[in-house]
Image 1: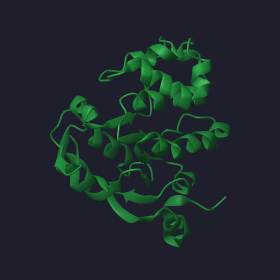
Image 2: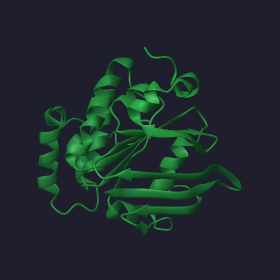
Image 3: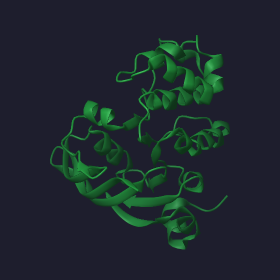
Image 4: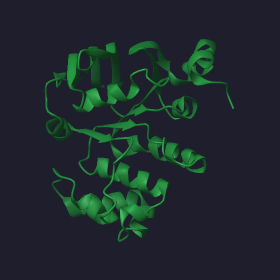
Length: 234
């Protein structure tokens, strides 16, 4: 069942368009990777989806309802979670406090317990300040914060960008498990090959447009995609 559909999505900052007519769909329980070179519009697309892009045209359909003019906080209530690339946790708060301050949660204590069950490493550090966590633990906490409201869709903006190379595979494994926790995933990622390896489908942006799209395994095997956008296979 289609959860998210974009139709002719365009927009940007000031008078300059960064996105130039994006059409895509995402099904419930699916992982969709959005890849592309630097400056292709990947993070701008993430901001458009969660309501942080100043100027947007086209339609953003969530369960068939156009939310393109809906404010960011209302989109969160409709079931969209967001993990930005930076500033995704509160360093001075403990792990538990980072979860407690999330708004719009009906059964807060029960939800925190469920997330500690899903991320046992966080449970072990529940009293530690987020600023003392390792990069991998901090990213795990960012995922848990986004899951507090039980979203149907999580938008992840470059989740491996700040991680040490040794932690990247672990982060992708966690992302692969997010649909089992009830959320479809739109994954904005510079590391295209490992991202596609855990995804159902993928799209590649160039100049704010989709230039390639299809099942993840098809994109991984595409010689043009490999040459221009994905890099050589390891």
